[in-house]
Amino acid sequence: MYWIMRIVTVMALLPLLAACKTSETSLNGSGWSNRSSMISEDASPLKKAKINFANGQYGLAEKRYRKAVENNPKTAEAWLGLAATYDRLKRFDTANQAYDVVVKLVGFTPTVLNNLGYHYYLRGDLRKARKTWLAAQAKDPNNPFIKNNLELLDKTPGGA
Image (cartoon, rainbow, N blue to C red):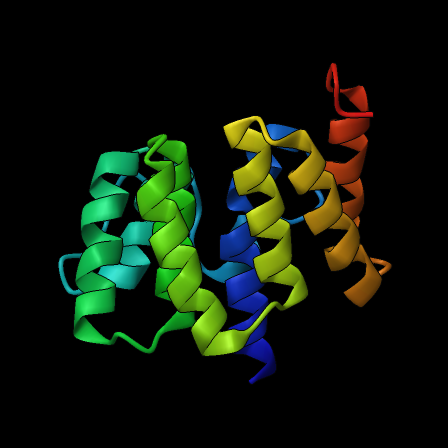
């Protein structure tokens, strides 16, 4: 169970890593890299989606995350990746639907709250982003990604 949550955390935080310009987590240690241009033909849709997302290929990532959730609708990791991808594509209403599924599957975990906070941040709802990140921080006070996002918000005009 720990490794699943670790993977979900890494996947969920990819958009935050890019936005915060942090290098605290190396994707190379997880078995895939954003530098990889070759995707094995026999890789799962979820693995392919992660690679596409890490490479900024959000259209392909969306297609593959959708395939992953079609193959296994109870995979929170795939739903969370799909939600983050929709955020990157600025398809916020569709992202909301994917986040609703994630919350039904795993609840408001620190990772889910952190991603939701970023979702609100991208939408320009800075007050809701702060409230959500503070809720995430309350559940995981030592999480450096949540801390970085709150710092990002403090530096954002109108976010303090």
